[in-house]
Amino acid sequence: MPGVHCWWRSLHCPHLLGFCYRLKENVSSLASAFVTAVFADERLLFTPATPDADAVPVIFAFPNDYTVGITSLGYQVVWATLATRADVQVSRLFTDLHEPLPACPELLGFSVSWELDYVNILGLLESLEIPLRSPDRTDAHPLIFGGGPVLTANPEPFADFFDVVLLGDGELLLDAFITAYKAVRQEGRSQQLRHLAQVPGVYVPSLYDVTYTAPDGKIRAIAPLEGAPAVVEKQTYRGNVLSASTVVTERAAWENIYMVEVVRSCPEMCRFCLASYLTLPFRPASLEQSLMPAIERGLAVTNRLGLLGASVTQHPEFDELLDYLNQPQFDDVRLSLASVRTGTVTEKLARSLVRHDTRSITIAVESGSDRLRQIINKKLETEEIVQAAINAKAGGLSSLKLYGMVGIPGEQPSDLDATVDLLKTLKKAAPGLRLTLGCSTFVPKAHTPFQWFGVNPQADKRLKILQKRLGALGVEFRPESYNWSVIQALISRGDRRLSHLLERVRHYGDTLGSYRRAFKELRGTLPPLEAYVFDPWQVDDLLPWEHLHGPLPKATLLKHQASAIALFAPAMV
Image (tube, rainbow, N blue to C red; front, side, top):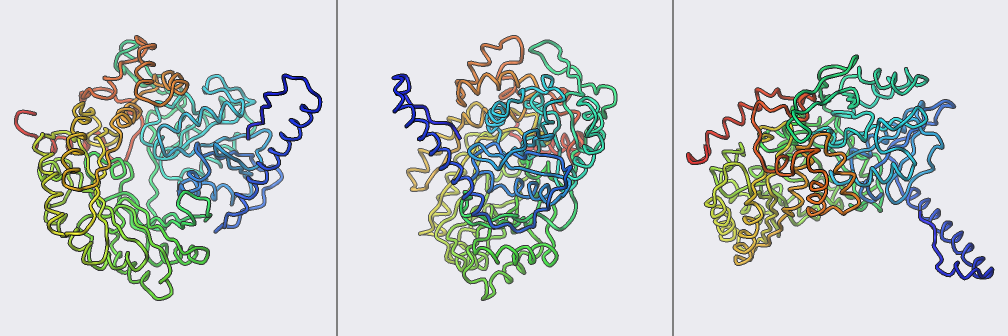
């Protein structure tokens, strides 16, 4: 916690100086008491191990506030995995508080769920007096490792900040990583990194030489250095026992929630969707071996349950899960669901949610245009969307939230008309049901068929058109920031030359103007913003993540892209 600065110290008054020192001590005591209270409020659903005398000292960080970090299921699970190993002594670190930290940590890890949290990663490294860039670190510094969805998708913009990146699912990666590190614990940094690079899914960026056609040109080659594998494969856990919360606390962003992962990935395979393509194959948790035991553990300490997954209601036994939760002993349980498949919104589901104190449901429709939904492989008919609204109202729900998108490749102005017409139809079909449309801008994501497309520069204008037209209908419209979408696309498609730009931007502020300013200052040393964000890429261009392989090969992604392009309007092909 920061110290107290007393402006009157310049008066050199001993009485005031004494007061200032006492005030600083009191504030430090209060801060310490607050941190102690935060961790004391946690209800653990696992038993931490007692660390061995020679346990590896590890700091595991979430680059945001405690309330945000402790609500991340991925962070919870990785922390618990480390804490149950007797050969590891792990301390948690957030931007606003931390557990007692080791004086000489050997490993410092980050779970990265949001692109702009890189600012906090750099800030935490500075606060621990660790050089920001991997080449500047010595044997005296801990190895900096990272994982999570942002780094698994495309770690290259952050490659110079990390010594090691774990690509894929923690169930497979974490224990293998720690075991491999222990084998070279007494070696020098260079030997450690070369050894770790042999572990499947462990990516050591410094062991790859990236060259360019010009300083501001395209990527010419990505060459592994001696001892590094030519390709690093994302690791995929294929078991049917999925994740559940390891801690419940009233200080989480979702107060006292216990989270259970019902499914992983999504069978729909919308062509823009990272959550589907990067996490394939679709895996439902076993109802009897995973879901029911996990739910019983959680509901022993709280009555708030969150069912997580990209397509929760497509679990093959979801009806049975609802029947289980509708038993009398769970009548006081508050139930929250992630976004559900539109065609699975039944009256039974709606009634079950109302019974468990939920009044709204969220579905992703992307567009009111049948043609656009076909382009993105959204297996959804307008009739299903209308029936979902009817069922939601009939089951007692008061609100239906829809997710939409503008700027989808192949989109025409007439597709916006179709979205407005869809909302009109829903209002007539389910009068009294409150409708909300949250709308984002298409952002190209690595490892998807649409990674070669750029952001549509007309998207901002189209968001404003929808806002005006839907407002006149009485539909609540919640657009996501277009500028944020541009920044997200920059990081999603970026290469490691961006690290210098990101360092500058963190001092300017996270606005689009700050990024443009930094691009101007670095002109000639990296491509312009437009090349990363708006320009379509050629299929034979070398991608920044070419050496990092996801579940599907490039040839398959190109086939899926070709199927989409075949549905474009003739003038666009």
